[in-house]
Each structure stands twice: as structure tokens, then as C-alpha cells.
Image 1 (cartoon, rainbow, N blue to C red):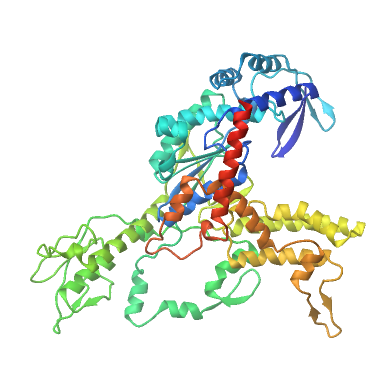
Image 2 (image 1 turned 180 degrees about the vertical axis):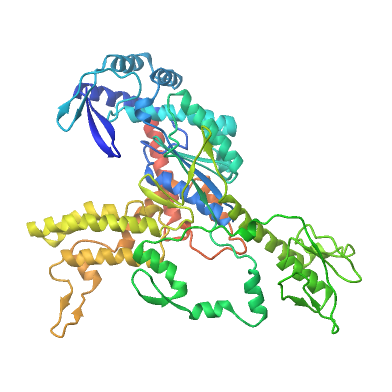
Length: 593
């Protein structure tokens, strides 16, 4: 068997086996017989009705659910070193027996593995023949299913150890908040909101993969801490003092004008981050607010009243003041939650277990008051912000080696960001589409192709690149304008009649976008994105994580934003289509049996 070595970059190669037609036909027959094997819900690779989109949307919704509930989510992207080439064949045969593979199939597979001689070919040159004792043939029709069965066995044992027999047999269900696993061939995500649980899960999965000959590549395995965006917290001491002196930073910020360092464009200060993302592909990194991480014993400050009865805050550097003893204690609860205040005549009251404000022991109905309810919500809100800041300092290890933490990771060809911002993913696909369009447009122009033929080539090549992963995008109006802009410029280039024309005075006349798109047999880009989103909705609509997302409510202090499930899609039609496809699949399985 000839193994073609395809360069992967960095001096590495991917070996693709060229099988004999007769053996390839046998593998196809075996693969069809093994289609009755049901894999765990965690697996998405090489399974009918699933793919990169279904794997990505589950990871996306897990991140957005944690964002909605103001909790950090820890994700580990596992990379197995030479997975297809390093798999232990003896262990694999034992797993196949456990899955009910018959003796004739096992004998055929084992005979091929034992007798196959391999010859590597690169750049037209052939190496010497050798025999492989590990791995499966990359490029073989049966190899993905064999590898899936091995991964399925590992995953079920992993879940049995962590969540019990029910999760191993039927999926993790309600435990999706505690632990989530997504496997696509040799690419995997482990996600949890508990760093201790995730480290234990990572140690167990690494050990189980070692038992089947697969070693985790620590240099390519990454960790991403997903934080729930910006949570409003108390003003900094400087901002609070400025507000007490009549200076309002927010109003000044809205009026402030700045100049972009990259293009010298003058714009509002609040628009600078989005301008850098859209025009220059520059994204902000998460900075840890050290004020949220302060942990110390409480200090007791003694307050005294002035001649007019006003109480001035005794904390050095604070300009706060109060007219009553109660408002002074409330000021400490909101501005100085780590400290206590002793008021003349009343002393130092204990803290309420709910709102953490100092309350008189005689105030028995304080917990029922509106002030306590709002204070409790505010305390939970500030604790969520502190937990997010602490989460960014969390580290994970594999084989005792610390794993690198990243803010953006390319998973199954789609960029995933720690802050759930899809602008970087969309910009990346736009860049790739522009390069693809630059190449194909020259060919179409040289061939003098008609607008409709150009549109067909555009959809098959450029648009497929542009919209890769778009079914999982969380698009804003600005993002859609960028996509539609590229789409329309390409349509104008392909059109012959309905295209922009320059007038004698130097101005331009632009035709109707509907007429231009009709001439090249295309739809607006939003139409294609909605169709792809509807396709993935058919899979995710009945998943437990989707129900949790739909039922969730935005917590106090979260920045307003749009979630994936709030975009345009017909969920009822998706449920009906999912039900119909499930019935058809059940009928097909009965026919196979």
C-alpha cells in the first residue's frame, strides 16, 4: 500500500493511504454493516446528521449559558498526538469484540493489518517497504468508524467514572452544567465551571487515552477561560470621589474624541474598540481587575459626627458622607464591603448574611425588606465579577506540565473567543473569501463567463469559504453589513447590466441590489446564513443545553447582548423536521437489523 506524505507545515506530514479498489470495497461493506452501532451523544465526527457545526454549536451554547448565568467556563482543547497512526491495534480489536463485531469481520481486519506492506511516497520519490504495527489507514472508508468506536469506549468509561452509569449510557442530561465533552475524531473539548472537576476530568481522559496508545500533545493542548463579559461593579475610588465633587466621567467620555493610531481617523472614544475590530482586526485582551481579588481581614473604622450632625466616611481617601447612622452603614456596605464601621451610641453592628450590610440585631424583618433584597442581588453581582477575575488566574496541567491559556482558539476550522465575540471569526472568513475571490474572478473574467455561471462558481467556491461556520455565528448588525458589503461588491463584479456606473460629473449611480442579485442568481447573504442556522437548529433544538439556554434569564449587572437562540429561526419547524428525521432513522435501523 502506498502512503502519500502530504506536508502539514512545520516539517510535519500527514500520511494518506492509497488502498486497492478491492479492499476499499470490502471496507465499505464492513462499514455499512457497522452502521447499527450507536455512539454516545458526545461524539460528532463521521456520524450521520452531525459534523463540525453540531460540535461547535454545543460548545457555543455552553459558553453562552455560562455567560447568561454570570459564571466562568473553563474549556480544554485536547490534541492527541498522531492519533490515527499511534492507536494500539490489540486494544482496538478488544474494543471491537466488545461492540459485537463478528469473527469474520475481525479476521479480515486483522489479516489486513498483519500483512499490509507500506511504501511512502513524497514528491514523486518512493521509500523502502515497511510494516506498521499501530494505527489505522488514513483515507480508508472503515478507519473513521473504527476510531470512533475506540473513542466511544473511552468516553463512556470516562463518564462512568465521573458521572455514573446513566451518563455513560444515555448522555449527561442535566449534568451539562457540571461537565461537558465534545469529541470530533481526535479533536476534543472538555468544559466545566468547576476548575477542580475539570482538572480531574482531564487527568482521567489522558489516562484512558494512554491505555489505547494515544498520548495527549501538551504543546498543542490549550486552555481557554470563558468569562461572562463585563459585569457592572462599584465605581473605583477615584471615579467615586470625582462624582462627589461634581465631575461626571461618563458624560465627558461620551464627548471625548480620539484618533486611531493605525489610520488617523477621528472618532468618538466609545467607538474606538469596535473600529479597531472591524477595520484593523485588533482585539482587546482581558485585563484582570486586581481590586476584585483583594482578600483581607475586616478593619473597623470609628465614625464621629460633625457639628451639624453629618457623618464623614472615616476611610482615608474617601469623600463619602452621610446624614444618618443608617446611611453611613449603607455607604460602607456598598463602597467598603471588606470593612466595618462603628457608629457612636450604637457600636459595630454585625453583617446581614444576605446583603452583607451592618444591621441592628433588633431589625428582625430586615431580610424581608427591599433594601436587603437589592443588596443581596448587588452582592451576588459583585461576587460574580470577582469570580471571573479569579478564573483568569486558574491553571491546568497534563502529565504535570502546565497548559497554555489562550483567548482565541481555532476549533474545527472556526475561531472560538473567550468573550464569545464572533467578530474575529467573521473577519477571518472575510479575509479568506477575499483571497479566494481574487483568484476565481480572474479566471471567470478570462473565460468571459455569463453572470449566472459566475454566480454558480461564486457560491461553490467563495461563498462556501465566506460562510464556513456561519450557522453558529452570533451576528450583529455591523457584522452583517460587512458580509453583505463583500457579497454585493462581488455581485457587481459579476453583473453586466445592473452594476454601478460612473456619471460624467464624477458621481456614481448604483443599481438596486435586488436587480443585481437576480441577474447573478444570488440571494442576500442574510438569507444563506438563516438557512444554515435553520439546519443546525434541527439538531440542537431537542438537546438539553438548548432548553437550559431558552429558560435562562439575564442576571443583574450583565451587559445587554444578543444570544444565538435569539436570532431569526423557526424553532417549531426545526422540531418537526428533527422528529421526522428521527422517525426515518428508526425505520432505517430496523431495516438494517
